[in-house]
Image 1 (tube, rainbow, N blue to C red):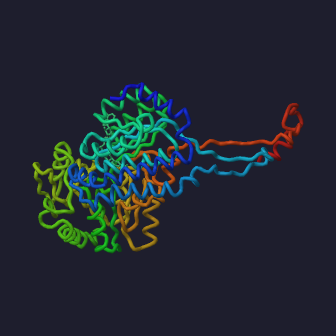
Image 2: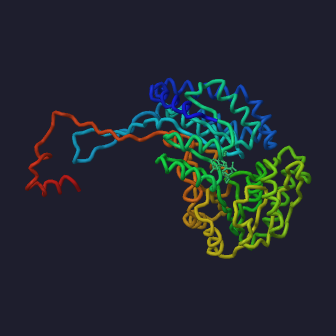
Image 3: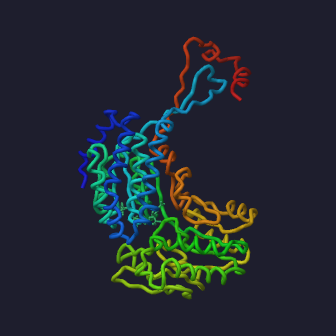
Length: 457
Ligand code: NAD
């Protein structure tokens, strides 16, 4: 466990100013990239051991995403660091105004187990780019990936700059947060633990980014391209065995296309994962027995359209689609975070909207329709962290878009330049020349009201 003196050393290291130059930041990003690529095979092995991810899936959802994020940071770092010049209002002329992006200091990044590499290292890229010192706390539930990440970090970074802190989150994190004032805490994980983190941060007025979970609804309208919808929904719902924060949590399908969609999804599951998904190269496993037991509990919540088989030894749960699910069943009140997809029908938009409103501010919202008007109506109707139209989950992989939740699904955002901004303070600077210093700005003020009303409007 981190003794506080190692965190104080990080503070001293940050205060020395060495992390702030463009050259330093760029070099650290390059080092990180090299170290990751040196351990590419180790990461494939580890993610297979923890979650049964194939190398292809690992590249698309973990390593490749991180490398793309690193490349974007390396390419744009200089322009991100440039001050933003701003215009100056009449009152302050002839002053000049700008915004300087200042590193925050020593920041804490806490990761979850479902994408254990990407969700810890992507925020790290933003934090390094912005010139900070970083404590990394990985999830203890993906031990193989945790061990490789420790090597990747410790082989290239000294502990006073990037500290890799393993262990039980419930012990390690309070021990740090209650005894040291971080300059920012970036947390990805469940809403329950997010609340604990938020409270600890509030005690010391530490700003936070919270990347939380929730129930992300997916609506399929009567005019959707059903074949395409089925492929895209099955792909994103059952990728990583459903253990994805932006997976479609439940489906709201227009009654007129329900049968067609269910048949298409059944067929697609078969094509993607075969009759024996437990042996499929393309299908993952549940992370541990605790999650296996939790998700298995949902399987009896409705009528099984497909799936439902489990194997505890292999931590396997078959891709499962359920209908006739009561809206008050746990599968419709909890975040599912597993390969179980409840399908509910609607005929009027208001019906579907009322169900979505039971879980406000989802992390993501997906609408499948070919009508522009419906697309607009739905996008306006559901406040959400992010959205896809005729797609699910993939918005997360475009680093030009901000990624984050709102309200119950989180606060703040990151990816690409948004990560840089998250880990930078925007410092307002006004510079006023001395050659112009009119008396009108100074007392006595009596009789100047009319002029002030003209200047300040
Ligand atoms: P979790 O909350 O159990 O753990 C996340 C981190 O918190 C881990 O590093 C853990 O060590 C630490 N932790 C656990 N208990 C703690 C405590 N009492 N005090 C302080 N720290 C503690 O989350 P998880 O199960 O790893 O992840 C699943 C959840 O994360 C789901 O709800 C999912 O939707 C969400 N998630 C969100 C995103 C996103 O980007 N918004 C991404 C992935 C996962």
